[in-house]
Length: 114
Length: 111
Image 1: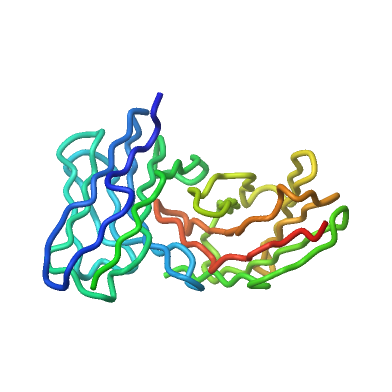
Image 2: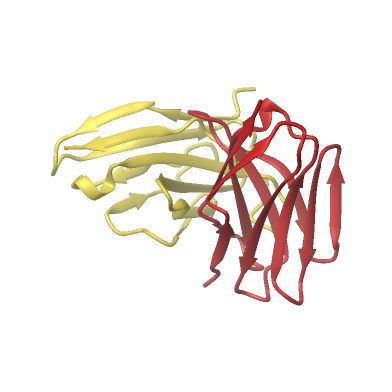
């Protein structure tokens, strides 16, 4: 049981480049989300999904796109990377979006935009 | 939307002493309050949580208290050990599927 798997673990991008951060879970969880973690700012929600085909914006969605074509996968796309997107990104999943279900996090992707 | 404030941002405690981290939330509809621990370079992991219909919950050396009237909740760690050194995050779920996190507390246990 792998849990939540993120790839890559590290990435360096040039300003303006695009890329996709991958997230996959094998726990048959309905709810998946993406957070970014910056020093002194905690974990901020970027986008989330309550099931395949359904996505919605979080607190800081600008510059990011998501899709959820399957229950297992929830990729995060950066269309035109900016230095302000330098951060550590975490994907998380839980059985349900209802309050009280534990969120399981991936190991994170450290992204640097130069 | 929900706003969660967490204090202190850093905390140093002698090994064996207790540590307390406090959080306040803004949305009275919030009904679920988890605490996550993140060791250096690792992913956040749930250590304890509490629902709004409960005032206190304990799990060995860890306890969480909730005051719904004042809209604040706290994490208590007793008999601290070196492995308790980490960053701790509180969070609140405003009655929907979104979790709002506090800004984190870096706890250092001094041997």
